[in-house]
Length: 99
Image (cartoon, rainbow, N blue to C red; front, side, top):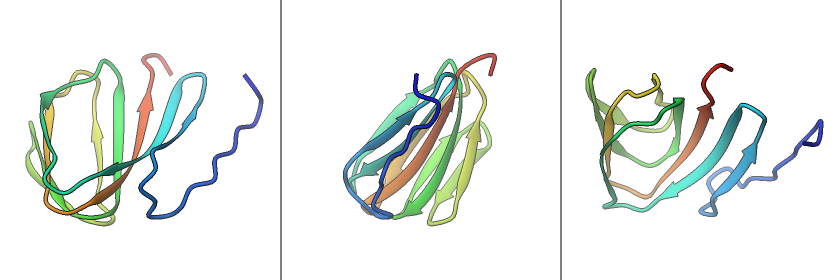
């Protein structure tokens, strides 16, 4: 793996972009309005930050409104589901176990 990786992202772009590291990934994700994500979990810790758009997440903490600036942390194996009311751009950070 190269010691430095660079990705050029449009701030509100619709193209998925990823930057992978040894123990983590960072992704910019475009989610179209109307998309629903069924309840699921991941074996790794995950952070989300809403760049633009709107929706809501259901999780153990209850319903969390998604709007620009919202940041959420999910522990490994924490269930969550989501519904998107507007076209939404997210930054997603996934951390591998043990990092």
